[in-house]
Length: 350
Image (cartoon, rainbow, N blue to C red; front, side, top):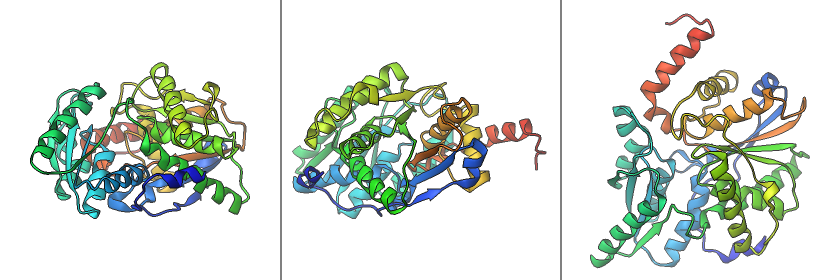
């Protein structure tokens, strides 16, 4: 995939990230479970967004930008990573925080990623609508125009699907990296499970694997919107990413598989399956998962395993996309759910 070299890119994270076996959790689910540890990308608590930002900020550097603007949920990992990346490149960072999650408490608004945003010196603003990507992008553009009038050179990282999916190229890179690790370990997977939100990680990984001739099934666990809406979004992004790297048609509609079985009650909101998956990961493998992305994705994987989607002993890869600071933004909710979970499991309260 030499076409990747045509895109400006800055090195931000640690790579390759580890490909680890999770034997205890795998035994619990009757699969051979492996984890691609993109929670270990390094920069400011890492995560999958570091991969995307290498291309977005590569473009920003190429344009000689001095200011980055980005929008996301209050506990967004993306905006925290963007703030860290901008700082390492000597850029100013403006973050727009969208109201996507109802009925939140003070820890959600002040701890976790929000606290890190402030520590990194980001300029924070609020956007009252959480489900209107075009309006959120338009708001950023208006701010960028104001900054340009003041002599700044702004670069906007857009949220909506009407802008090129440059960030997805980061996961085309991951597919190439993963392929090399599989060859080193003489390993082939029967199934891959990944979070599916903006669809850039999902689509980039799927395109990268198919472009390299790997037809392993990839299931995206819906963390933002339902399957009926997410599936066409992923396919659209796949087509755009494939075109960017000159691999048109490498992904078909049949390749796009998504599940929303653990999404309810919605984005960033806890449910029993997620808290159970987070507890299983922590107590069997000391594996930390977050409530928004990786916890729900592991919950989806658990549901697939227990529902018969994988044959006994199947080699299953879980893409750990990080997002760990968000755990602290859910302190009260998480503590309450853990107490209920432990009581249901028969554990006596401390």
